Length: 454
Image (cartoon, rainbow, N blue to C red; front, side, top):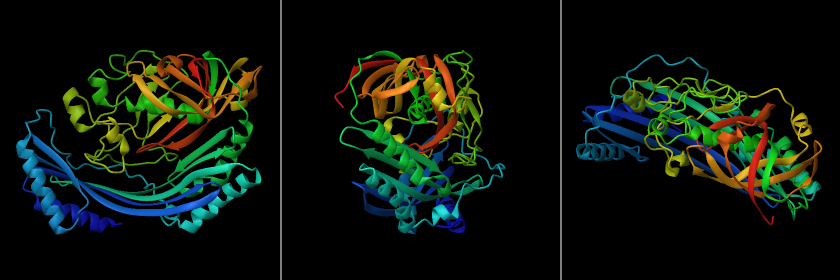
């Protein structure tokens, strides 16, 4: 990984060599190590180091972008020549606001932890070993991955802006299985000590044991209690459509509804890059300070997030939510998510404890998490998918027995109009290019449309 001085020198070299009217260059650096395990054995330790430049050039209002991982002199020259040639072929973009002028950035402490950056295969193996020993003791099959990463983000442009931040991240996913059931647990934090691998392992194994020999249940509308992992799916679908591009083009559940009470007053969703429990970042990939944005305020549709382009097009101010023009570390860019996107989403907690939420349901379904969820209709966030890794029947306020997984097709917006309770505890989980946090939810009705055989 290049250090700050080396990154600064590299970016300034790119700017000095550029012949464009304006130039912006983003450095995306990664050192990542991953310990994978399956069948109660560690079977793989892998590591990678990457450094990528994402370059945007402007000739007046003609803008082009490309990326390269060839960081030597010849690679930089080739990338600049190609970018300039592409820009000459582009139509003028009347909305192009120019690249970001330099301005003071928040003086936050970097979300960087040396123990996470220095984590070794032995360190990860020791942590995972506690999971595997517990799984073997309980005769359950555990699989998953424990990852520790170090990143360096930097942005510079021809107006004199330079912004740099190092950061770290640890994340964990565990699936435990028996012959007839499975259990799940996950966690993520920018400091590895906050990820209790052994506790998450016990959670997944115990859930798999409780979920054995599930019974069938008929499709229908049922009250549900959703663990934070299932609630995280709600959060992801809501915030992925909270970017200004989708909102302004009428493709989002927020479009034309800002200021309307669309959900229960118990629901508040924010994007907050300053929250130390998530993955703090002081600036976006245009060098703009990140702002806290209230997407849903006590059930009322709030604000979208903006980058400079969409802020300029709509007479707004950038909230600091630009993504890199190219990013090999963000697979959501290949999944149709474009423009500004919230990457620090939080669903605010309530005051309910999970046992009390279960006790409040006479007959219903308890869901650990959702799987293979896909958007059917964006306007009301109608989603289809399956339950997974621990689904239970609630009878008279108790988890009576495990049930076979169910398929659902449900508007998440409508479901969030029927909130009975919101959990006090929240759980972190890593997304494509984010860490989100959600609480458990008790909902008055949720539509299950089909049964499965597993």
